[in-house]
Length: 449
Image (cartoon, rainbow, N blue to C red; front, top):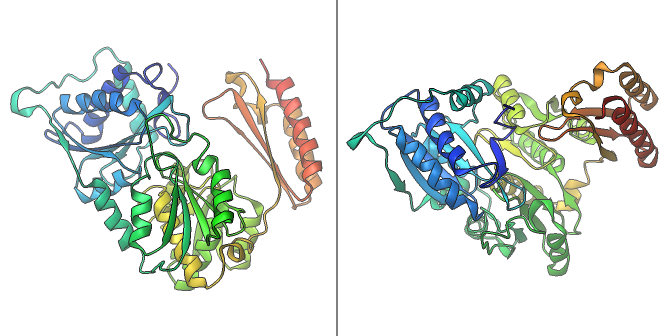
């Protein structure tokens, strides 16, 4: 069987690939493994606004209770709420039912340990091995030792208190447009920015179970861009379905992505003396412009594989406090243990207000290099072997020599599809597109089906 866990939990089409039977097994086995068989443990359970969340929550909670742990259900909350409450309530684990920015028919289940961090690969592999074994988990408590489903009514409120405590800046008089993606931030995002005094306009905050991420949110910011311009707002903020990532828009309707947010917040944190060890962590997909910006600011930059879990690992290794991805997963480790879209939005707003500059002035401090990203369709068994092919390796080396340090090639296998992702970055977008297209054709010829 292929690896069950991807880069962000277990995902699939709900009730087809991610079935209630699998959700039950995940709840049962993961709880037992994470708690090390502790009796009467506590697991925080949250979810986004998809219709299938009710189905999967029922099965997941049954699994948790079947090994004697209580499921503390907080309902619809942004993903970062769960690791925060896991720590606050001293629970043994946390779990979120969400497929983030994916279409409504998908759903996912991702776990956090008692410290609010995502599970290690080794623990995920242990969970999968037990699910696939014929023995499973023998422990089946009865009577008073069976776990309970406990509803927690103020999960969002406690998360808002946490967010409010993360800043001392008033946003009074600041005009902000919020796009909640008809997802998990639909209550929390308007509430926190009202608490902070902002003048807000909110769109896509009426979830019906089916409209999450549909032509809205961080993956479809066009409506946000238009409304920011029409309303004369100072900036706009867009979240994805589970609100663990942020995309922003300046007052002219131009996008502010994760690289911009890292640049703006890193400079602000250095000026405030809170950028621990003078380091920012990003991934190999970070724009070259971010490297140059941070170097000019006297800030060091280290890069990891794609995935916020790898960013977080590096941050914990080096005792760093700021890291993230171009996609908008930004981690402020002194405040939370995962990407947090609302916290990122507050920190971005704080940096803008404290600077006395406009959002566009701050964003334009980062000069981005054009990037071209294409996919090469290959066989699944070959997608990790692109550098082992002499012709492909030779062509990549030739392109890098051609760039003379003013560009780069990033090749990586897709985590979920039979694809090799090809990214070229440099000064001449037309030339890069031609080279990327030729490289894709070569990869498909050499590694295709």
